[in-house]
Length: 431
Ligand SMILES: *Cc1c(COP(=O)(O)O)cnc(C)c1O
Image (cartoon, rainbow, N blue to C red):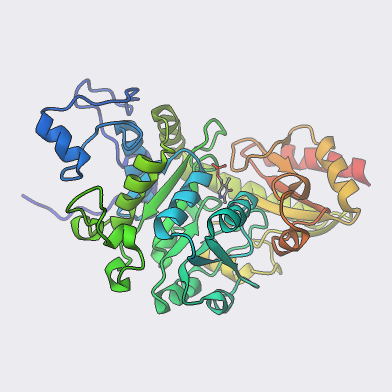
């Protein structure tokens, strides 16, 4: 008898979604399929897979069973119809932009983004004429103000790297809908445990899985999630990789053949078959393992970060702290609304003593490691103005809230008293 099954809760999906005991061996853990190729049943099957007349594994650049398990799990956690795993967070953004646009097109992008994203956008603008239309401020009206007839998409982060600002996703999604534009949200700093952008109207969600999803700082990876909701065909031939004929795949029209997740299919076909940045099965396996503890880790990341931010805010050497879970902070209401469990554990603060104080603090830390990753189990620190945001012009640095006096912390899962003690001793050396 068929019964209505209640959807599984988030923590259960984090452990189970997309993977099951291996039917061939009974192995409980997702096997790592280290194989480049997959034997075809017949020459007809091989030809059909190559012509996109049927789906199936053929070559691991385009898809692999271990990678597919990761894709199903992240899609489930984000509430997406489908996902495409790629070699890094950078490739995730690159593939999204290249799949949506061609030279001469433009897209509205938040002026507050991860430094690598800003760098990629500026490079693609200069060399390939894919034009970012950066916002002046971060409100939905600021996004709407940049839209022109050339605009093909809107891009923002859910929680901004490095300043921890939480964006008004519902407001920005309403702007996107009004102008028939897909909304792309980089959800790396929130992870689906804190914010699920598709619930607020995002059409495409991307991640650097190198951060919270993997969690342990072992592997680089990225993923693209397709909400499957955007009506590509309503825009005529504006998104012609999705709605048009592919001359080298006779009869293929992705929007017709795969209406529920056309963007993901276009990303896989163009992004992985043509451009090629696939994820290794080993990295997919490690990321999948990391995701199993995501909800537990995020709760501790957030509570530790809040305690550290509160401690810093009251310290006489500190000019300001940007962590919107603290009372009286700019953006407090947006953080409370979109990230009630906490706005993650990556945030910035600034020294009254300027760059010299910031650098002295970083080199005086003992427990907190000076390195460029974020979202790891171990606590990390960096000076963005001379590292992650170094390549940006000063005006872009200012827009991203990254001055010479600014330090970024990524708070890990250590005992919080030990963390505060380490930060306190380093602050004492600055004074
Ligand atoms: C790190 C990061 C990226 C890039 O990801 P990689 O895996 O390092 O390539 C993109 N977006 C955000 C918000 C990030 O923090």
